[in-house]
Image 1 (cartoon, helix red, strand yellow):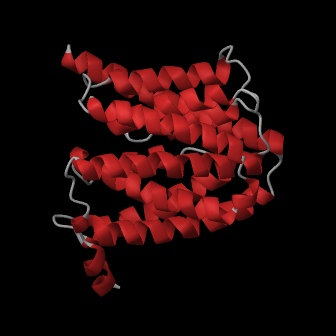
Image 2: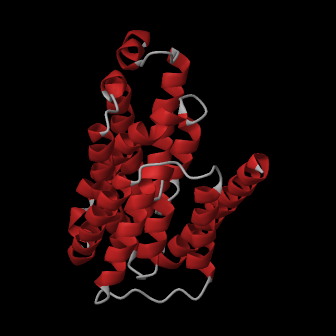
Length: 258
């Protein structure tokens, strides 16, 4: 087992940390598949405990691409393709704009903005996004894809956008996964273009993706046995908990920088 760990150990990470990260990938993929959201942000939080901040966003993007691709493949029949097409067009435009201004905002602002948006999307007077209003999905894709270059895990924002459409829980999970494949794929292209070296982390990323697929499969079994109303209630609770944490971190960082 330790010989296998050596194959996936990037420079500077001990074997026990690699094992924690691989198991965390399975756990967080299970969370995302069974509840619809939450795993990506949770995985990023775990990764920041052990890896440099400059490495987390691009590596996390590759892992989430693999995890969401597995989720997408397992339920591709339920994807709302017109929604995905609109999101893709917006994402391409958003990433192109974000890549031109790939700079860091003052610490705390992105977390605060993201947290407030999620609360508003869950509890505020957010207009219902019908399938005929795909321009709103495209706009959401542009905004979230631009932001993902700076904050990494914008999954809660995308989930809130799709949640407003009131889809069946299976359609929600599969369409959300497909949208995140697009968004993370574009992010990887941008970071590769600016010179980030993915090579030293290749083994770790492959292992985390494979365990993410395992977590996705287990989460899918739970999803099939969950009632729509319970699913959306749990989804709202998870989103609000994530929003509360983001707002707390944002206010803390802004206060520390003042």
